[in-house]
Length: 325
Length: 274
Image 1: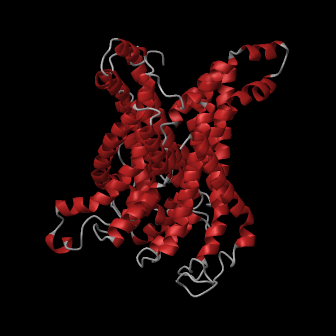
Image 2 (image 1 turned 90 degrees about the vertical axis):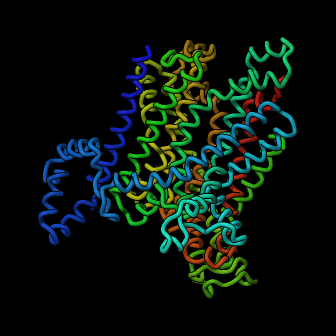
Image 3 (image 1 turned 180 degrees about the vertical axis):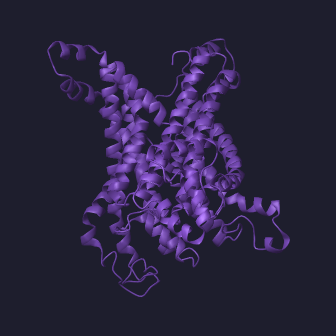
């Protein structure tokens, strides 16, 4: 049962990835005025050899079906084309930028999980109380403010008016002489990290609160209560642990989705990660780079799904993967 | 704040926005895209919120921009909710192979990241607000199919559906008259939250420079203020109004959805007995 489920899961992921590849192929090759035809004549004039190589590698002189298979083969082998803007293989550019995104993504995910789950658990436990209602209202407010507006507000207040943090970028101008220092980079990372965390806390909070409410309705909580356990003991040993279980799946997916949410925040803070790369690729219409970003996002979501699926039965032994699916 | 109060506040604010959008041509003192004064003027009596770097009146642009922003949000939400309702309904009503096919397709499509795909697609098509909301609606529609389907699954087995069938009612008649009304409240909540999401996304696209260049919208206003000096010079009356307008509208929709949620699911209001 389990093996069959895993096989099906991987098959779906593979199909999803193939759909993404097909979409990018269609966009790159079939659209009128595509990038290959607009850049190749120019290349042929400057360097006929390079143009020849390019044509052969991507099979541009072959029928469209053959081009498609060549493209799929290329993508699967990690050959994702060349970025116009950087003049480098797309995968090289992306893997360099991905590191920068992770610098702000990891701390902000951890902050979001810690705050969101603690406050959410408390809110759910004290369900219906004054504290719960006011926290819930506050979170509805925080979640409704768009992430780009949080980012601009943070820069305006802490960067522009209070002058506590830099307005953007990842190192100060001194780096030209002294080289890039880690404390300096971390100092620049503080505001974007906060912005990213603030925009994802409400989501974690809602889910944790809901999960807590669900758990409190379970029979074993009633049993614990009728045994005469103290409220604290019920919370610690019965309610909290069980309500934290579904969060595992959520966190894995949230991490993947936050990479996209970082487009706005990295753009506003000029943080040189995947999000700013996406923005730049859009601005100068760097199609190969854009398709690369799209494919890497698909891969991340697929990976997050699989990790969540595999880790769940490890944490919760009641769940047998593949049952009742 | 109770859910009832949240609902009322949300409704009033949303109503004010819709009213502003409808009446905007009568309210604005200047043409929203014409050059109406000196560039970068401070707020004054003749220009309530000053002028931008091109000498356009910021107040007029702000009021007029309500239209594009509302259209993107509401149209996108309408499309996505219709797609998920119709597909979800067909899937669970007919069951069998159709259901199998749709559920499997949704499983696969959920893995394709929507937002990056939206970015790539808007770049290819001429970015008119209708194309943008259409793309958002269709791409986002797949997300809701599962929820609607699982809601309808129990309705299909209900006695009144069997009764209608026994009386010889057609499939389409049953779906429209007996099944749809039962999920309408859920669909309404979905619609409100979708409108909020797509409105923010539409403004976000404008901010990223992917908006419809032929209309005035808040995203492009923020983009202009942010990159053409409003931010660097600290001209808050240029940067803040569109941002605050979006934020307030988003809060109004969130409150509306939050209030409606309590309406359809009374269990949310009940506190757990202890």
